[in-house]
Image (cartoon, rainbow, N blue to C red; front, side, top):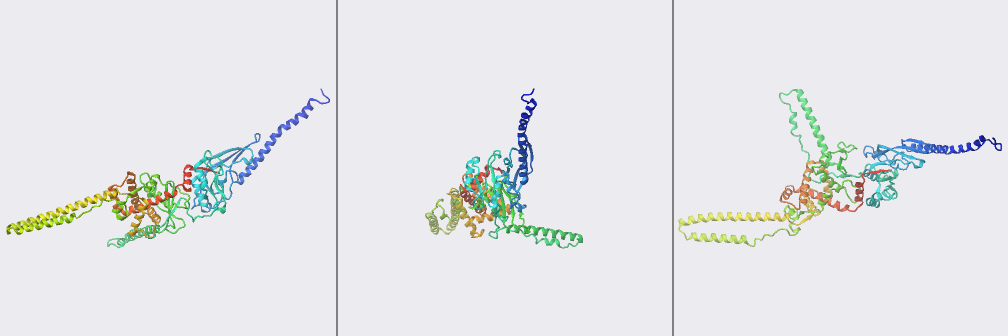
Length: 567
């Protein structure tokens, strides 16, 4: 039936259809908005050169994006020189992608899925990077550490405020490395980086962080030279009477080859002696040693044999070298250093361990320059009294002989001569015994004498070495140590000798005092001990200078966070 001319169909048409259209509009809007957002996201990914999988739910207006997560490390400074010193051509503009400012060596370690509604919600996954390598790379490019930021990070850790600066641009005006939000860090320290090509103030000619240059000796000390083994080899070239011509030619060729090998080895040894050596020091000690210039004057440095300087559990050579080279490479300008000198070596370097009396016995120090430590043995005329007594006894015996008959006198003279000879021998034995007792007493008192500071001992030892023309007069302790470290890289025997002396020294320091056997060991290798004191004195100076500095804050932070998230 109609109601005012309107049927039920008309009512459904006029009311139901508009309502249905209104119900579809949100779906249509969501579809359009989702497709528009997806298009913008894909465009962002293309501009940033990112490969990603995208999926969209137009009904719920959700876009899923799968982006790879990477572990990165800086490129090799020698093999990738151009990319190392330049910025990436296509850095990402997506939040979390600040790490793409640089060229990296990358390794995919998984996928990161995120669900977003708008394009500005997209975040590029942060990368995992070794904290030490990151800081080292920025320092190599010319970044400057922010002392306040490193102190704050060391004291507060993950509670350090977002935006806290750790590294600044070379002019110190803008942030180069700073703390980022912890959203995507999974509990790791989260960082972000910013850099401009105009900030790169260094190049491949500069020495990178974690590296130290050891100067060549250049005739500043007496060095063992390669033995000349060519003199007798010419005899092998002479023709034997019954030798075939083929054998002669074959022998000549082998001798010529041996000559070439000997010349090559000798040339390499001399090249290594004359050229500086650069060493890379990591948390585990010496990593690489390169001789600058190379044997054939190549642009690429040649690697040297360093197995005798690697840190091993059974030998201390590697620890001593790494500690000494760390101390040598540390100065007021040193911002970052990788190897931490063991606490027991630092403690040993600060102890007063060398008795001053021992240095007197060794002839390194004049006794007048030391506090009184030895008993003074005064004769008080005892030897004169003994001489007077023996003279009086001889005169009395001769007077008695004069009153005797000739036969008795002859026998008395023989008895007197024998008795005087025995007395002289006994007096000599008594005197030698007394002198030996005094020497033994003096040696024991020397071992118990007041102990001197390592720095003072090193000063006297350096003077002693210079007096014997072992080192040049113009050299300081640090310069001598640099030359010694250069030789330790090249000469395994020298390294073993000096490290054995250091082990002996540290052993008596830990046990509470020097023993007689320790004194004898020093006496047999006096110049080695004198040079060892220079190494320990330099370690002591460095440990005192670094307390409470930026370098200590930075090093402690690098130990607290080995891996960080960068984005």
